[in-house]
Image (tube, rainbow, N blue to C red; front, side):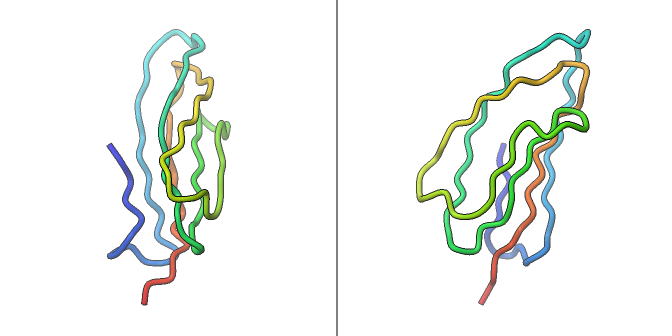
Length: 88
């Protein structure tokens, strides 16, 4: 799954992907890849419940990068991208 940030998205759009995870509150590992390229990149935040476990803004180069974070299985995991692109 992925969140697409290019056209027809507009500046200020907010894309969200939620994963429901079940468990007894056990600690788990979340591994994901992101590609944030361009001078007008917005912000990507990943939440485990209400806690931010990953946050990154701006141009990160033209390559896919991996992130690994600890989450708790009793929470919903949310990927929230605030689009900050300028469409011509």
